[in-house]
Length: 111
Image (cartoon, rainbow, N blue to C red; front, side, top):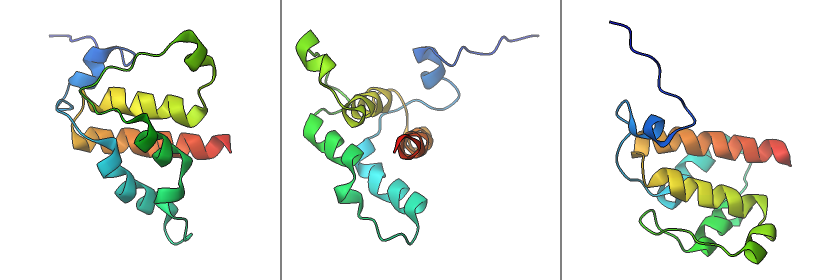
């Protein structure tokens, strides 16, 4: 029986294949950051994305509502922090770790 693949742009994709659960990107950040940085001696607590996660004050169970004025003033780190919080409420720690790896590497490419 043929089963069509799930579209990776949907919420259903995030909830499929054992990805379900909730996770906290702030808890996983230090470990993933350390794995990526290795011995470069950069401190995770000074990373702008980490600071945006802390500043956003959102937890996976909170909804982010922003005014139009606030949206146009968001930095890339703020947007990625909102995305990580959004994904965290639908995925377990293992998949969230992969998402965090991707987002951190993507953010490094923008520098």
